[in-house]
Image (cartoon, rainbow, N blue to C red):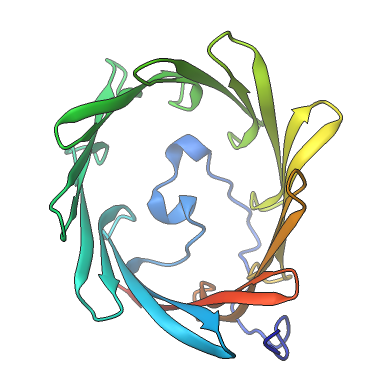
Length: 273
């Protein structure tokens, strides 16, 4: 296992503001959903796999954001710096997503995801096309502020349903998954700290049978330190450890471990407006 000294100490960053403002999920922009701080312009993420006691560079992802916090483009480059895919997100004048289009450069496959809104301006349907063929669609039901409370995914031969419940702050606290016969086969519970940051996520097969567990740890200044994921069905555990952060509080280096083995690391460069 790669030795990573002092992983969880010696961080410096401005503390969270005294006033705690928790934004409902339905009203978050892409930066807020991704737990990113500051007016981010772009993020370049380089991925390295650990092999034969060395980190080997694999690819780079470049994500670009608008000045109001919405994702506009994602470009993936291979180890030779050639473009693998390019995804562009298009918006309506009110900043709602209109559609996104992704092109893979090698074979020119095209994926398009289109969003439809109801008379209240809330998302009502999503249509996913691959090379002009409709692969599936999702129909949404929302509450009074636009939070999605039910989504039905229609595939060619069957459909599945999710029901979503929120806490008093408008944060998702429970997700139920139903099969085509409308039998619940899985549910997820989510817990948050006082700042509205997710700390515990549990997936259950039934009321007494946890099949997945995710624990997220922050320090007293709100910096992300560690994410532990356990797949209890397959007896797997994955740890993500965050060792460096910038002045805004966003992580710059992530190590991914499985058991005693280091799998990969990701290094981010973040630019701001």
